[in-house]
Length: 92
Image (tube, rainbow, N blue to C red):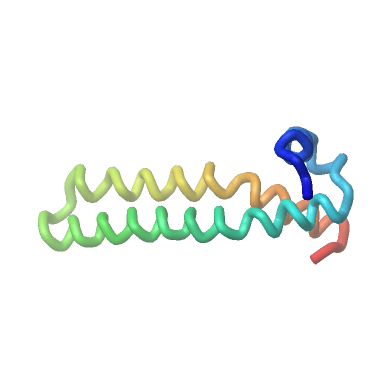
């Protein structure tokens, strides 16, 4: 079992320096993050749709959509980088 120090060292290194096993482990650990990100984005869209139906278009409709866009752009960045590195190494 890895200690916290070893895990932090793995997270601090660039993806290109990780071994294949470490990269696959990082992808496996990122699955809960993807689910949480999808829930955040879905919740924001749900709030925006509810607000649009109840109150029409307004600030309460636009803010959740902007938050969903920002969540999509920034929260999934690490997972996309890991997926690109796995694809470059022909790993799955």
